[in-house]
Each structure stands twice: as structure tokens, then as C-alpha cells.
Picture 1: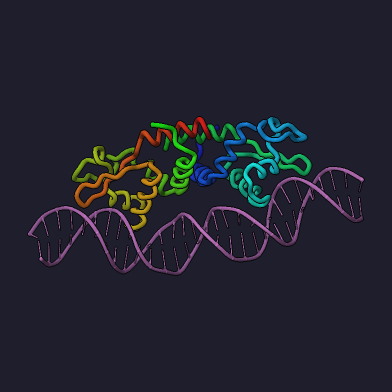
Picture 2: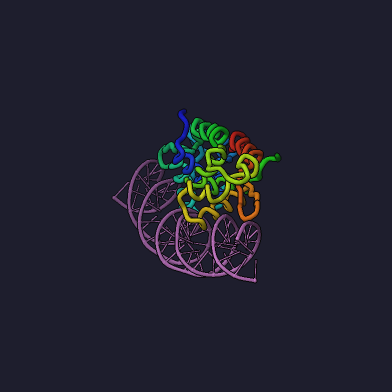
Length: 104
Length: 104
DNA sequence: TCGGTAAATCACGATATTCCGATATAGTTG
DNA sequence: CAACTATATCGGAATATCGTGATTTACCGA
């Protein structure tokens, strides 16, 4: 994964500059800690409903939080039927980690 | 340096989630690239005026940018006479880098 | 002490973010 | 097809951030 641009870094920092979004990204490191779902979370990601329940925000807010994380490249979405599943983009997150270590 | 709390991380991400502030923190890695000043920048930090000039913002904005970075713990200020000098808190920045690598 | 300079703080309009309920869109099931 | 469920998007009110000029505070030198 190539190094993120300054613009991409800013976008990631903005997304992480919110306690709930930062927490969600942490939760997604352990998808199995969420309630069971039809398709295993380790494969397709965690269903939005479960993220919403743990974050204790409205459905609308949960959806927008995930859209923000997605625009920042931190997570990706897999839609299966009616369900949107979110999981971490580990390679991009690692690249950001490297950038923080090197260029910040 | 102990690990930053989630709250401290959020505060740092907020501060870095702005292109100019992110750039300033990068500039401060090379204090000698700024114009010469009475007290050497490598010792006390870079004078606000020089940061303001490079960022091309008003004096007020420059001062507030640095206050934001300071509140996030990313820089510290050394006042010498009428001049405020800013430099990176390398230990805290390193701790945040470690947190990003580990907990993000 | 006075005039000048540096920086912090204040006040404020402009803009963006936050979070929600309501609605729209899709898919699923009977 | 109709009712139901999951999610996305819209519209909006509350709040926060952004950037500025004006003011205040602090320090300096004559």
C-alpha cells in the first residue's frame, strides 16, 4: 500500500477525531465480539445494526459515522442482501500508522 | 511516556485534522529551515512569526493554531522576551505514533 | 515613561459538524 | 403484491470550528 497523501491523512485524522468513530474502529478489530449474524463477521464484516447498538446512536447517525470512516478509507462495506457489513481496511490503516510514525 | 488515553488521542486527531496544522507540525521537524532568530530554533523552538509567515495566515490564526496543537500536547511553547517559540513534543508524538500502530 | 513590537485573547460572521427524525430505497418474506 | 426490515439519504436545529480584525497584555529599547 502506497503512502497516503497529506490530504488523505487529514481526512483520516478528521474521521478519527471523534470519540465514537475512534471507538468503532477499535471495536472492529474484534468482529467476533459482536452478536452472531447470518454471514460470519470475520468474513464480510460487522452488520451496521450491531455497530449501532454498541455505539448507542440512532440508525441514521450510525450510518453516517460509517460513511465518514469509509470516505476516509478506513473501512469498507460489503452489502449482503439487506445488510451492510463493515470491516477495517487493515492495509490502509497500517499505511496511515506508518505515515504517523514517519511523517508526523 | 505513558500511553495516551482515548480522549488524548481524539484531541490529537482533531488537531491534526486540519491541513495547515498538520503541515506546521511537519515543518517543525526541521527548525533550521526557518529564518534565523536571536535564539537558535533548535534550542528553544521556532518563533511564531516565522510559522505565521510560512503558513500565510493572520497573526491571530497562527496563534490559535499553535494553541490547538499545544492543547493536544503535540508542541510546547518557550517564551523568551516578547517571542513565543514552538517546538515538537517528540516524546508525546512518538507515544501517539505507537498508539496508532497498536490501538488504532 | 513612552512608543513600538510580539503574541494572546476577544467578538463575530461564515462555514462545517453533529445528531436526529422523517423519508426514500432495496431487499426479504409471506 | 403487500408488509416488513435494513440501510441510506434528506432536512434541519444545535453546536463547533474557522479565520479575521480589533483589542489587550507583555516585553523591549530609547
